[in-house]
Amino acid sequence: RAGITSTIANLDEGSNESIACRALYAMTRDAVLQAFPWPFAVARQALVARTGVTIPTGWTYAYAKPDGCLLARSVVKSGVVPNAITDNYAFEVAGPNIFANTDGLMLVYTQQITDPTMFSPKFIGLLAWALASELLLALKGKVEDAGSLRSAYQQELQEVERLAQSESHAPDAGGEMAICALALQRAGMGSSISALNQTSEVARIARLTYAT
Image 1 (cartoon, helix red, strand yellow):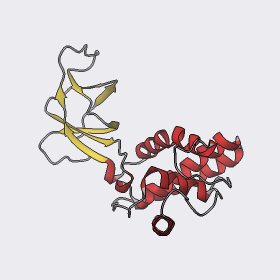
Image 2 (cartoon, helix red, strand yellow; image 1 turned 180 degrees about the horizontal axis):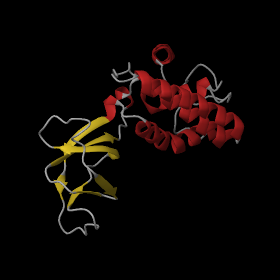
Image 3 (tube, helix red, strand yellow; image 1 turned 30 degrees about the vertical axis):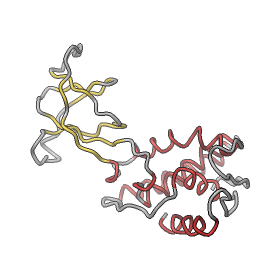
């Protein structure tokens, strides 16, 4: 998708492409996770009260932000089925703390998902667009072309926002290296990944490309 014609064998090979992928993959993945409330990444957890914390003016309670929380989306009463209109409570996230004015709360949030087998097909497609844009900037410095890829990402995200209210798990995505390789391949970097079994990997990438 970025028009890059090189291939990578794995993310540790030391090539410019693999170094760029390693540097950009995690932050791009997390940004795409935060861009939409993907069902596979949404978690709900009862908030645990914190003591010894200075509570800012305007708030009454301090809670600990759950580990792995990328983005807090809403706070509801714990133990009840929330009404989307009436049962969301005001809150503020500040570092490891969440402040609110109600006790007994549950946080609805996007968690950091690092296992690619949990990614949905639409998420994989969006991640490939976003990563291709970042790779083009990092490897070629083509701001205008990267902007075109970013526009394609935004268009697909808008489609996701309209249609992807129910997500299913994707077929085996083959791990981080396979997703990076897909982004590079969509950028014109070749059709094989030589570090893996050619037959099984071709089939895996074919399934991944079909799903996206």
